[in-house]
Length: 62
Image 1 (cartoon, rainbow, N blue to C red):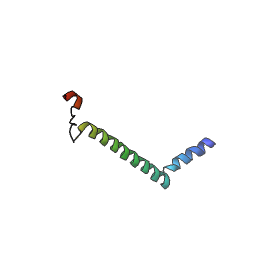
Image 2 (tube, rainbow, N blue to C red):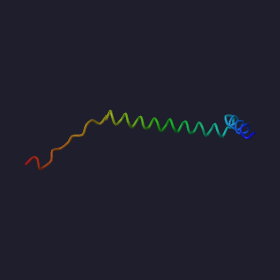
Image 3 (cartoon, rainbow, N blue to C red):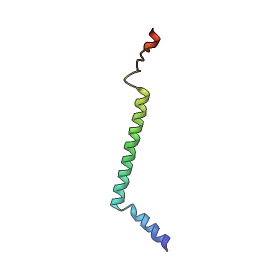
Image 4 (cartoon, rainbow, N blue to C red):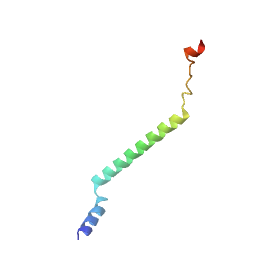
């Protein structure tokens, strides 16, 4: 009997506005986090500012 009640409660959750709101918020948050991570990875590979210029050490000059 408890299984039927639990199943009915799960089915009704899809119609609960609070559940739908929370689910959309979690989905949106996940998409934002994923976009940020992908953006950071792309920037780290593209490096639009160019490579660093490495100065020679003073000891090696003289």
